[in-house]
Length: 243
Image 1: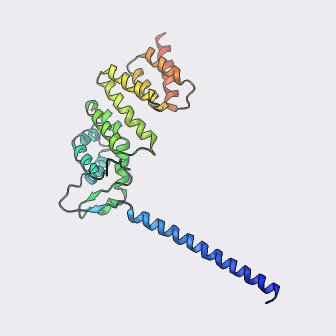
Image 2: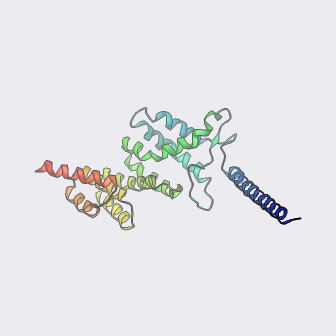
Image 3: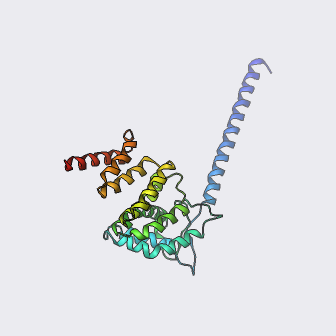
């Protein structure tokens, strides 16, 4: 074998090795995808068991535009069954990603299986609005405490902050202002977001507690959070109206 032939052989062997390596990497990636698909919780048919989350997600989607108070009232009535079905899936107290929960489905009701999880997440992301619209303030406090214990919100800061704020908002509308102030002040001392501070300012302004709102917002004048900006503008408008 001459020098040129040896170079061609070496090149060919190198190309073969590269192709082999690429094939192994592709196979490994495919296997990883297959494994993820296998372990992903699937929607299941189960006879003789209540399909609480399934029924809840469908009904709440139907009620969304039915009236301001109807979704919230339905939630109050049906949340306990949904909560228990969720808690069945918690292992060693580990919080749940609502995008990956298992949903029991009755036979003959499979037509919406692909959208049920998204429907459920959308409902739970907006549940503070449903409860407020129905003025279910007493019920808000245990609901959102439970949700913060059940739901994994490590990748969803906005929903987490809305859940946290909802408890303080409930205290406000129940007239329990001392509890409201202690609750929000403790959250902010623990490093809660500027959005939470904005929600606190919102209820202060709602109660015409301008001095307290101004003192709070003075700590956030350089914030880039839209909620803070809106509340600063609202505060100024209310102060101007009093002149």
